[in-house]
Image (cartoon, rainbow, N blue to C red; front, side, top):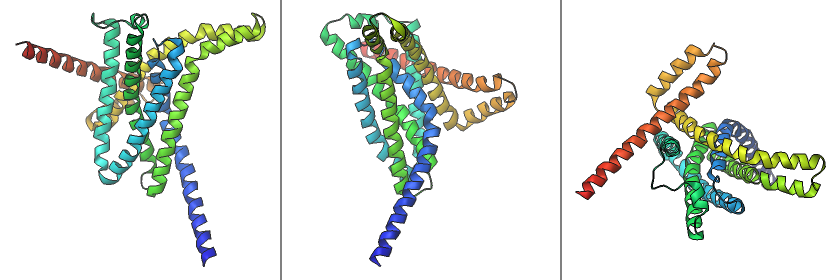
Length: 305
C-alpha cells in the first residue's frame, strides 16, 4: 500500500509539472508583448544617469521589481479566488496611470516647466543632488514596473484560470520571476554596450574586426538609448491605451468595429489598430494631465485665499 501511495504521489507530481510546463509556455507567449514594452520602458529610465551609476540604478529598479512581484503575485491570486471582478478595475487604474505618466513626459519635453531642471543639469549638480536624482529615477521606474507587472500577472492568471490552485501559483510565480530576470538582465546589457565597445577597442589595439565591432558599439549605444527613450514613451500609450480598450466595453466595441472594417486592407489593417490604441492612450493621458493641472491650480488658489 505504501508503495502504491508513493507511485500515486509521484504520478500527481508529474501531472502537475506537466501542466506547469504547458501553462508556463502559453503564458510566456501571451506576455511576450508586454515584456518588450517593459524592456523599452525600463531601458529609458536610466537615461541621464552617470555611466558608472547605470548598473547600480538598474539593480535598484530590479530589486524594486522583485518586491512588486512579491506583493502582486499573492494579492492577484487571492483576489482572483475571492473577488475576480476587482482585477479589471485595478488594471484600468494602472493603465490610466501609464497614460498620464506618458503624457507628462511628452508635455515636459515640448512644454518644459521653468521650475524643473533639465536632466543634464542634474548630472552636473552636487553629489547630494545626484543621489536624489537617482532615487527619483529608481522610484519612477519601480512605479511603472508595478503597472506592467500587474498586467503580466493578470495575463498569466487568465491562462491558468480553471486549473488547480497549485498550478496557478507555480505558473504565475514562475512567469513573474523569469520576466523580471529577463527584463533587467537585458536592460543591464543594453546600458553597458558602450563599455563593451571600449573594451573591444582596447583589446584590439585599434586594428582588425574586433576594433570595428568596438567602434560600432560605441557609436550605436547612445543612439540606441535615444531610440529606447522614444519607444518607451510610446509603449506607455500603447500599454495604457490597450488596457483601457480591453477593460471598458464601450471603447472595446468601438475599436473592434474599426478593426474589422479595415482588417482586409493590406498594411493598414495591421498598423491602424496600434495607431488607434496609441491615440487612445495619448488622449486619456492628456485628459488626466489637464484634470490634475486644473485641480492643482484650484487647490493653490484656495490655499492662497
